[in-house]
Amino acid sequence: MTCGERKIQISCWLDGALAEPERRLLEIHLESCPACSRFLSEQRELAALLSDQDSQLQLPHDLWQRIESRIAPAASPMVFEPGRAAWWRQEWSYALAASLLLILLSGSLFLGSERIDTRQLAELDRFQVRVDGNPFLSEPERTNPFFDLPGAEANPFSPTRSP
Amino acid sequence: MPNDLSPPQLKAVVERAQRGSIEDFQQLYELFAKPIFNFIWRLSGSSQEAEDLTQDTFVKVHSELPKLRDPAQFKFWLYRIARNEVYQKLRREQRTSLVSIDDDETGYYEFLEDESPGLDPEQTFLSKELRSVVQSALDAMTPKYRDVFVLAVFQRFSYEDITKIVGRSLLSVKTDIYRARLVMKDCLNAYLQRRRKK
Image 1 (spheres, one colour):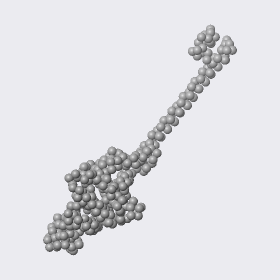
Image 2 (cartoon, rainbow over the protein chains, first blue to last red):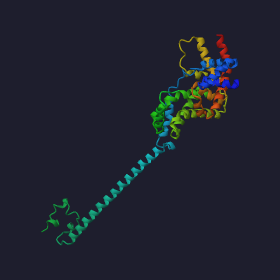
Image 3 (cartoon, rainbow over the protein chains, first blue to last red):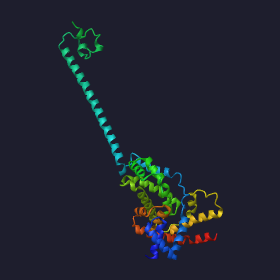
Image 4 (tube, each protein chain N blue to C red):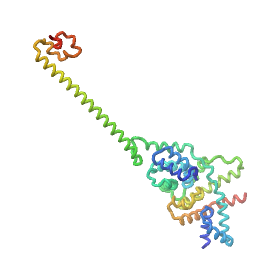
């Protein structure tokens, strides 16, 4: 092994990346090689200088707020991102459910109004039969379709009160 | 290096952040922001760029996190993104190897706590001078040497972990760190000689 290769081993040793058997062989070499020994002492001095170089480092205090303000728009309902696909699908399911509910409600209102019309028509039919078959009814009674409704009970000419 | 969480705990935090938990993503930020800021600063040589690139890195990590297949590899993946952000920006600015810190020395010191009150003015001067010389030496290195040197010496990563971040062989990492040490020694020689005289 050349001194150049030994110096690479010294560099690894300083970083704790040299296996024990290799380290023992390196120490034997260092006893007989002034150049490699000098390199080791120089690099040790350098390592001591560089240690704790960044221990005083402080982060800008508002860095997280700045990052958060940039990632927050990703959660906006109008932004589609592949990573947000699950959320997007969930929103669509809500919209679909709301639409179906609206359709059902409007359908029931329509059917309800149709039922009212049918009932009114039946009443009119019954009225017409009673009017047509009763020769004692006056003209106003013939033309009043609500004569048997509660409001018409006071009518002395009501067919229900007729003898 | 952040060591507040065990690897399984860190993996669990990453998994929750992948599912969209902003609290867990903030925890990842709190664990890694300082070393990442430091790493980027050493690579870029500029405190302002380090601020911007640390932001860019975490924003990118947030958007790409759901795609990370193995949450146990988060740390290496994060450093890889940070490193890519730095070199992409340097390439954009056509500054592939040399980054001057001449205009930014004041910014550098703004991010450091006050010197220890026990230090005399001469020690304070040497300390500031050393920081400046170290950064100049890093700037003088090619990116290939600089990133592995910063990861090994300042960030204390093992060589195996460095291979995962830089995507080079173990032999290449060992050799490049050794060569970076030679550059650093050459740059610091004058400083060391002044120091020995005092």
